[in-house]
Amino acid sequence: MSDLVEGRVVRVDAKVCHVELGDEVLLAAPRGALFEGLAGVKNPIAVGDQVRLDPRSDPLALVEVLPRRNWLSRVASSHDPREQVLAANVDQLLVFASVAHPKFSSNRTDRILAACQWHGIPAVLVLNKIDLDKKGLTAELRATYESVPVPILETCAVDGRGLDELKELLRDKVTVLYGPSGAGKSTTLNAIQPGLGLKVGKISRHWEQGRHTTTHSRLIPLEQGGWVIDTPGIRVFRLHGVKKDQIRDLFPEFVRVQGRCKYPNCTHDHEPECAVLDALEEGAIANTRYMSYLEMLVEAAPDDFAYDDEEDEEDDALE
Ligand SMILES: Nc1nc2c(ncn2[C@@H]2O[C@H](COP(=O)(O)OP(=O)(O)O)[C@@H](O)[C@H]2O)c(=O)[nH]1
Ligand SMILES: [Mg+2]
Ligand SMILES: [Zn+2]
Image 1: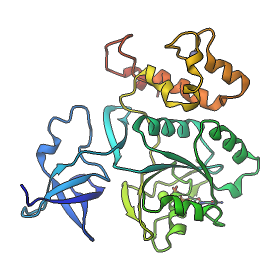
Image 2: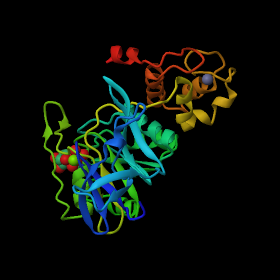
Image 3: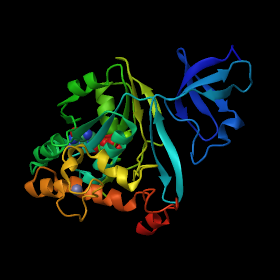
């Protein structure tokens, strides 16, 4: 076994993985054993995984996935409760959002920020298309997210504002780029690294949503050093494995005050003398953040004390 070679997965297709080994990318077929005993995990291999290959096998076999430093995952779909690993061994995640076209979604943003808290992945909020902001929404969003706090970068991919800073942020790091289709991820990457040639989608006027031009999640090398993981248009991000009573700890601005709630296990929903509800009333906690919290609370798996049924059929009924 000592002559196995180690590489990094840069793309995962249905039957084959693209693995970077030195300065080449090779196709490798995962061994069947990797798909056994997965215990609720949909995919055994994700982009960013360090893996071992058997160089003597033909076709080249991927035989082992090395332990991960961290990973980002979600519930696979509303019909599939398994954990879907989206990326492994990452340094940070950019929550890429546009202030308009498509419209900014607090719910989407807060879900991914909570996921980053859960997985211990540092997050930065990128507010793109600031050229289209006619109503001062950028300033409003800045105030909301600074109160969390989340670092914020304002960009405009068409006139270049903020792109130098963004480029510095990406240097020598493995960064997951997450955001709705049409927010400007490909345009921004192309501007940062001309020659990358990522396809840019046309916004469909009817839906105000970009077309899904990115189909696979991939690890893209940057000339300046570092990698970007472009995730395909994920519509709903549901956290996997988080219990109801753990959601409140994924909102840092709640964590700062919730020690003063009357009940130590306060859900900040209806309880009397709730410090989070007080902060909400005073405007110290943003209403949009609180609404996102409530929605996640409703759909999360019940905690161990209240139920022992793992099924989440209720979630499906809500869709
Ligand atoms: N006005 C404006 N349009 C932008 C900006 N960034 C991207 N776009 C446009 O938004 C559309 C979708 O961009 P794209 O990069 O494909 O988004 P992606 O789906 O996130 O990769 C394209 O028509 C871009 O030209 C920006 O900062 N301002
Ligand atoms: Mg794109
Ligand atoms: Zn409370």
